Image (cartoon, rainbow, N blue to C red; front, side, top):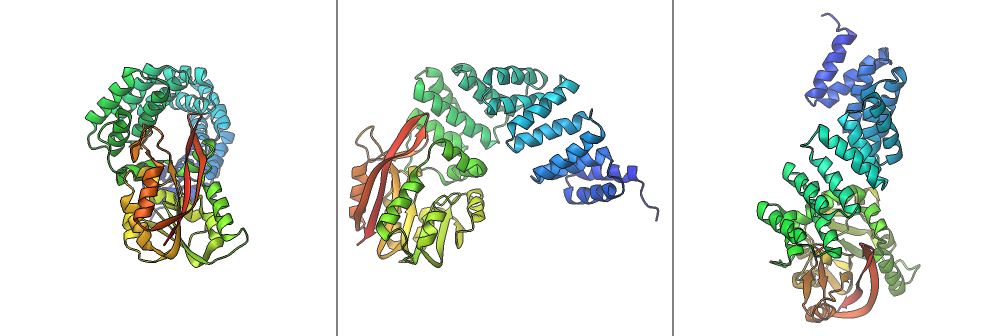
Amino acid sequence: MFKKTEAELTNQSLDLYQKKDYKKAEKICRQILKKNPTNNTVLINLGNILFLQKKYEEAIHCYQMAQDINPDSLLATVNMANTYLEMENYVQAEKYARLAINFDSQNYMALNVLGSSLLEQEHYDEALQVLQQALKLKKDDAWLYNYLSRCYQQKEMLTDAIQSGWRAVELAPQDEDHHINFGYMLYELSLDSQEKIIKEYARKWVQKFPDNKVAQHMGKAILKQEIPDRADAEYIREIFDIFASDFENVLNNLDYQTPQIMSKILAQIYGKDSHPKLHILDAGCGTGLCGNFLKPYAGFLSLEGVDLSSKMLAQAKMKKVYNRLYCNDIISFLNQKKSAYDLIVSADVLTYLGDLDSFFEKAQKALKKGGRILFSITENKEDDSNYILHSSGRYQHHLKYIHLLLKKFGFDIEKEEYHCLRKEALEEVKGYIISAIKA
């Protein structure tokens, strides 16, 4: 059998890449580069394969080698810019995008990356100009409209922001990112404006996408109609699966305080240096923000976490503090447990439940006698209702309702503290952190 030439192997690797057989394509690329490390085409192809595997540093290395061989390589330069964008290194993304535009001023990808990186660096005027230029080249790119909507919002161009966000949803209705961006944009705009266009588009959104959980929940929250007893599980899963990789950065920007406050409360209850060896459940553990401060109180193999989002759980797993993690609805999970835990902690989870009757009933049964529950709620200060669905899509609860339920299910309140839990749109979001003991 004749051995294939380098050109034939190069073409084979490109063909395998197009067919999405990345494993074989990578193997052939590395085989070629072992003999000829200056094959520019193969370096870029290998970089693309590594990029798709999220091995961004390795991809950058390949693109850089290709550019060193051919400094005028537009493809290597654009791909490097796009990789830096994915890495959230916006300064480097901007640098290489500008270099690519010097090679080709009409390169759509370079303009897209440049506009996106400028947007993330809050250079809104230039970002808007660049994104509009990119739009002339590709009018059906939903992500371009997504970025444009964010630019317009920052420049307080309300109508343009809403219409661009809506266009992104229309162009790619299957992409939940666009629905989530649109929903949060409507919510944020509604905080500062009562313009009819906000509710007009919320109504269009709900009507056009009756099967989309994000549209139904967030749209109805803005319209203040048909308030469900709890957020749909699919809606919660989709939201947090999308936000998982950047979740903690987002919370840092919101000055999120709940885990720190809970940590102080537990130190007051058990003693700062105490190790009571409890069986603990972090109910709605997310990325594991409570895990580190809960671990010292847990017995051997006794810290568990449960969450609806598998991608949030993947982040929690990397912290290596939980002994077991479960992907499940919290109430369904608690319903399977009886006298299992000494402590159940639920940080900013009840904000996705309206009616809390089932939660406290199941939590009470899942706790051992004398067991403790530590949880937070966001304060309903709008009216006397047990709970309301805020335009953010999150529930707020009245303190009297919480007191009623705790008494109903045999809990004695141990501690009750009022705090600013986080900030939204520069406004403080206040609520209660409560510790109660099962009688």
